[in-house]
Image 1 (cartoon, one colour):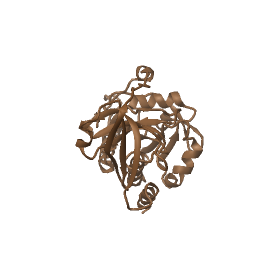
Image 2 (spheres, one colour; image 1 turned 180 degrees about the vertical axis):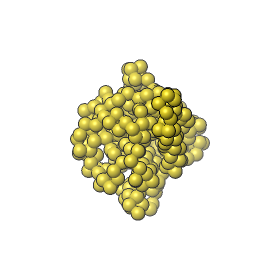
Image 3 (cartoon, rainbow, N blue to C red; image 1 turned 180 degrees about the horizontal axis):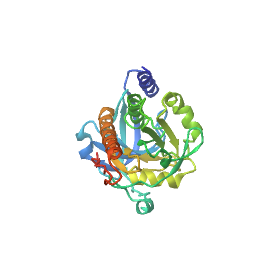
Image 4 (cartoon, rainbow, N blue to C red; image 1 turned 90 degrees about the vertical axis):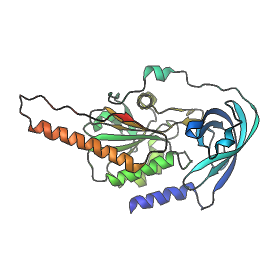
Length: 305
């Protein structure tokens, strides 16, 4: 019942009516991903809805982008429903130079890890402003998602939060799992902000956590880079990002990564339960072996999706 109430509350915050909302938006096309039905646009502020951002938008009809190219300065319509959003009605206004703000420093310093490799230990802040290390939860599985509190698109961060809520409800009594939502908005999302925004929701779940990256930018970049989460424009208040969630094993090993917003909580639940079953079998086998026997080895089905 509590998770249903939470979901309804989030939907209410996203939209105060059942009517779809339409916004006129101006921006510059950064990338077109036809195979994913998305277009990445560096857009201006949308009055009454969203600050300037660089973000992927869903395309409802591929014909809408047939004449578009990277670098086009465009006007378009953003349609926001209770649970989704998409763009349509493009008008090309001119051309603009594309500036690559990624200098590759963090990619070289902290390359993305492969499934099965160990992640670096990092330190962030919980909503009570207490420093907490990722390794402090060793012995537990950790499901990590990257979000930021000001994201208004229903199928982006708000959807990730809802899915984490479903998982929190599914694993309410599971002490061997921690759900961690990490905000990459290290300028705005202080522990106080996150506590006000998410605190009432997560307070009834012992294993659902929200961490702030304020004051810990290097640690944030370390973990996000190793998992494959990308974000930019934080200090310019022109945020862009992709979506990544990851499952980390009891010993800091990267088990699986979920890309984008299409993953389902029920599928992640099955994956987590499978990994836990493997862990339990290994523990039981190790406990039953004599001291002269070789220790059992885990055989996790490493993968990304």
